[in-house]
Image 1 (cartoon, protein in one colour):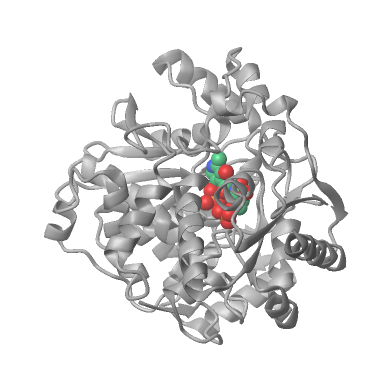
Image 2: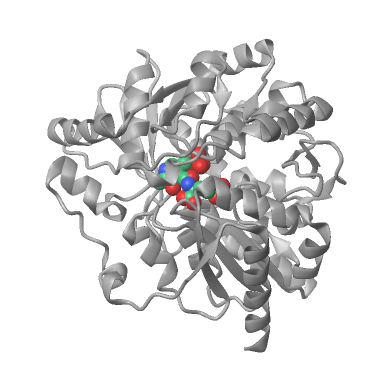
Length: 467
Ligand SMILES: Cc1ncc(COP(=O)(O)O)c(C=O)c1O
Ligand SMILES: N[C@@H](CCOP(=O)(O)O)C(=O)O
């Protein structure tokens, strides 16, 4: 499989090169040159497979020819060996026609582990083959950071530098990152928002000489491999409900648009997905886009679902490119306009095509809290604030005859304050994290400037090399 940039000015690359490159050199995001399509019998052949094998079979067309199926299957088996639930991604019913797929049974208790554990294995495999080292620079609003750190800690061929917005994650989320003391891990608490962190990461990638000198690589969902590894769980859920004969809809709490883009990818591969529902918090740019073609940045406001406190949703660019009929020049021009004005001018026809498949629902904090409480009272299900938003969106848009699967993206124990306020319940951390609040933390506070981050990255790489 070859990959092309959404902005059309970067070289086409193989899977392994896309994995190590992350963001395309023209600032665009990589997508498959042609989408693999599975036939009805291909989907049927996946029914009942153990999750690691299903994941490898779904991802194999994306990694070929660089990584053969047997190797990929081995890497997936290792990736999912540390998950605490035997089904990896169990599905439970919460109401008539409304189901929840839990994606938080990995080591850091959020859906990010689903892809990040695979990425850790893929990086190790490709870097060992090439005898290379890379520096991963990532931005997090709370969950990507710990998942990336967990997947990369102690790996000799990787240094990892994670930028989080200072004071804007939950304490559990921060401690999950800052208590990892391995020398190849650096945490930066940036005085700004997640959007500032993500923008700084992209600025570092745009400086091609710095990027090459530091051998920068990405683990955010700007890296195509993240999306590829998020497609299989949609397949798993759809097959459980009778795909390919039966259509299924999904509701996804959304921030950077990576998770729901993977669902779109599964549909593009032929999975019968009827409807995709975006759940937003008060940072509702995606819901405003879907309801009124209003993609205008209004600033990031802290909410009960901090991981979704995002206004610039990176992966929307991938959908935009597809909605524009893969017109890279048009995509580059719209993205340049968005960067300079804070408003994205999406052509009406593309917007209408998006709304034929996607719907959006936004919940403010009091609605989120009420959703957590009511759901718990009625069904006994304890959803974290992010998952609760997805469940509310699923309920709003479910249609008779089509199962609606809401993605539960984080364990409630990551957000104890919100859970206590909504239900009076303080969900316990699992045993491997029971002493999280006694562990020593290490992080640096930095201003949200390019110079400060570059200096921190240089120091991190130098100190890692010195070990
Ligand atoms: C718990 C949780 N839910 C939802 C999201 C939103 O996912 P995405 O950014 O892929 O849209 C995130 C962060 O990305 C998250 O950490
Ligand atoms: N919500 C994310 C933000 C980064 O998203 P990503 O999918 O691009 O890594 C987080 O928790 O960090």
